[in-house]
Amino acid sequence: MAVKIRLARRGRKKLAIFDIVVADARAPRDGRFIEKIGTYNPNTNPASINLNDDKALQWVLNGAQPTDTARAILSYKGVLLKKHLQVGVNKGAISQETADAKFNEWKNVKDSKISGKADSLLSKKEAEKAARLADEAKVNAARAEAIAKKNAVVEEAPATEEASQEVAEESAE
Image (cartoon, rainbow, N blue to C red; front, top):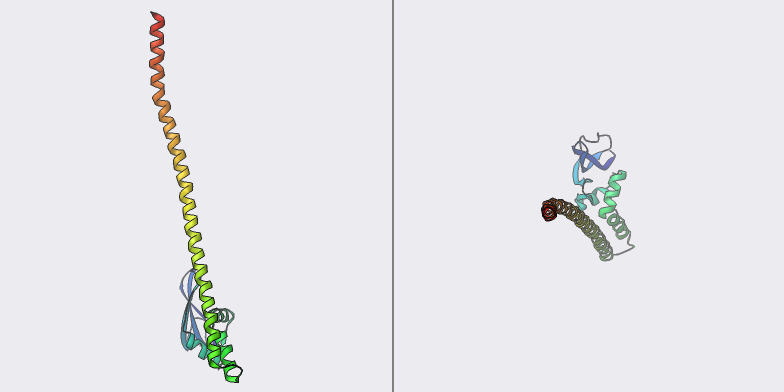
């Protein structure tokens, strides 16, 4: 029986969320599966991936073939690197401690990149919000200035009428 690691769609229209499942290759996409090993939400930025790394590694070591998208997710989470290092340990090329050290170093770098991206997205969002507020403040200031100018013109008009009446009275005398 050929076993695949693939995505099973759920969620509503145009807002899909996927389960990462281990299923028989002959089973339908959203049909029967052997085991659910995680979830994938592409609607967030960066995409949310919850994966049971140990179960995924065990299935990959047992011969489960991931689909293209599932392979990208497993690679992103480090499961394929861990498999590569474990095969090296099994062949005797490296020790288990060395493999664990390499994986932990890679994981720390990866986590810092992910958190850096999230921080940059947050700061970019805050900068855009500040720019929108500044633009709105300029528009409001211009609007207030126009209203003040209009009110000043209305107030000056009666003053000029009074002055013209005084000038007319003086000339009449």
